[in-house]
Image (cartoon, rainbow, N blue to C red):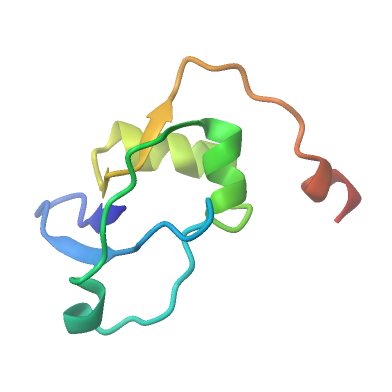
Length: 88
């Protein structure tokens, strides 16, 4: 997955998928540039879980604004309750 600045569209972070998650191992641009992009299409809730339980609306904004290259999300899939978030 690649995150881009909304205004400039400049790449600011690249994250590899590891076992269905997108862990942050570094914030060094030189190290993150070596990462691969994901190819699997996720639901918003799957992306929510893979990105560390970020708010589903934030997932939708990342995709809608085009700042998350390589994060393929089906925005038409219905949102479901997140059991992990419910039970905290």
